[in-house]
Length: 425
Ligand code: URA
Image (cartoon, rainbow, N blue to C red):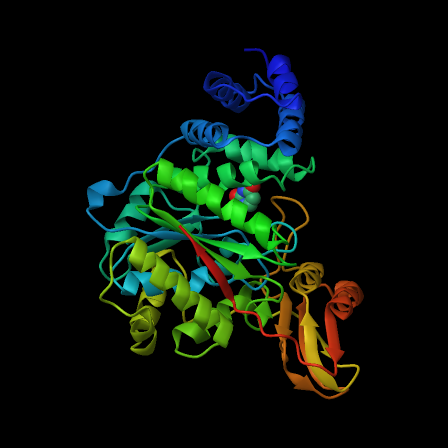
C-alpha cells in the first residue's frame, strides 16, 4: 500500500483493509509514514469513522507496535480500571489498594494529565519520594507481594508506541474527539498492559470528553467490544462528570482526600464511586464473597495504600506539599449552589498550576481548588465557597474568573442526578 492512497480511500469513505491498517501503523511507528500524513489520515478517520472490524484491527496493530506485558505466570487474579478522565477524579488512589485488599491484584499503567483533567501519576508524584517508573520485574514483584498487590506506575516507552506518537499528533491537530480513535487508544494500552479483566469508567458531562450520554454510550460499547473480542473481560460504567468529584481538584489536595476515603471518611460521591467500581472489578475477576465496604471500614485498604506507596519509594506518612499562596472565593448571593461546572473548576485548577499546557511540563504539587460548598448546598452571601492554592499568585485572577463562570447560586435546588448512570457489558 502507499500512504496517499490509504488517506484518499479513508477520505472518500471506504473501509480500510486489515493489511492497509497493519501497514500504516507499522510504517508510522518507524517514521516511514510522516506526522503530516498520519495527521491527514486521523482527520479522515475523524470525519468518516471506522467500522468495528477496522477499529479492532487498528487496536491490534497499535498493541503489536510494542510489547505486551504478561503477568499470567504469577498465578494471580488481576483486574484494572480505566477512567476516560474528569475533574477531581482521584478514584484510582483509594480504589487500587481497596481491590487489592479484597484479594485481586491491580496492575495499573497510568498517565499524566493534559489540559483541564488531572493525571493519576501527577497526583501520586505529590507524595514525597514516590516514583512512577518501574521495571516489569519490579511490577511483578509488587503485584505478587501479599502485603501489597497493587501497582500504579508509568507505561514504559515500548507499550503501544504507535499510540503514544499518534496521541501526541491528535492532541495538536483537533483529532482527539473521535470514538474509534479514543477507543483504540485506550484499549491498545490496557490490552498491552496484560490485565486479566478491565472495568471502564466512562465519564459524561461538561468535565468529560463526551458531553452527551449517547456518545459516551457509544464509546463505552466500542471499548467493551474491543476488549471482549480480544479475550479481555471488559465492562463499563457511565458516570456523571457535570460537577467535580469530591471537594478537591489538584494533585496533593486530591491525595489528601483519597486518604480520607481510605480512613473511612471522605466525600459521599467519592466513596460511592470507589465502592461501585470496586464491586464491578471484583465481579469481573470472579470474586463475589467480599464486600469492599468492609475493607474500607476495617483499615485493610489503608494498610495496602501505605504498602503500595512505600513499595514505590514514597513516604505515606510525610506531610504533603502545600502551595505558597491561597485566595478565597466567596458566594455573591444567598441561595443554593445550583451549578458547579466541572470543566470550569478544572480550568481554574489548571490556571493555578495543577495541570500542564504542554507535554513534559512540571505541575505544581500543591496547586488546585478546595471546595467548601458543593452542588445543592445552601450558602449565604460572603460565605467561602472555595480556596484556591498556587505557587504562582499572578494566575489567581484568571482562576477566579474561570470559577466565577462555573458557579451559580439560585433560589431553586438542582435536580439530583445519579452518579452512576448505566452499566454496559
Ligand atoms: N485517553 C487516551 O489514552 N487516548 C485517547 O484518545 C483519549 C483519552
